[in-house]
Length: 92
Image (tube, rainbow, N blue to C red; front, side, top):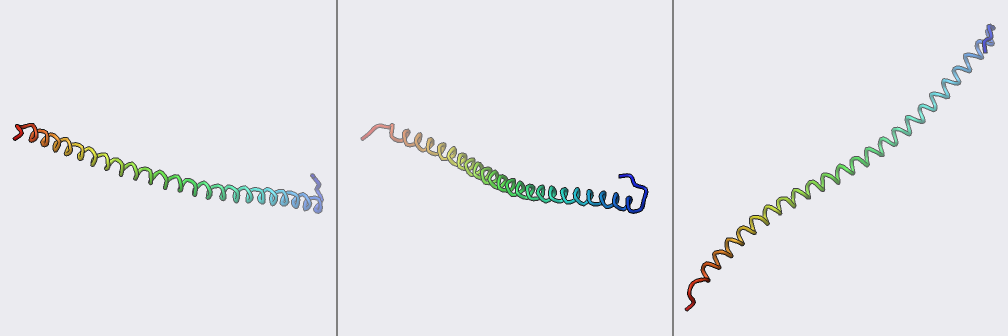
């Protein structure tokens, strides 16, 4: 509307302000929805990180257990060799 009268200009200003208000309300809704999704995503990401941390710790424990088993196997092999040596001699 391109009315050069004061009432016409006021109506045009009101229409533009209303359009701006409508646009702002739409943007506020989108920001609120985005914020909710971001919070949900953050919670999911935190849960996944906690799960990965627990898995990493589990692998460290299993790795430590593997080192223990390796040492225990070596000790058992050594003891088995000593037992075999002592029991290979002549029997009375």
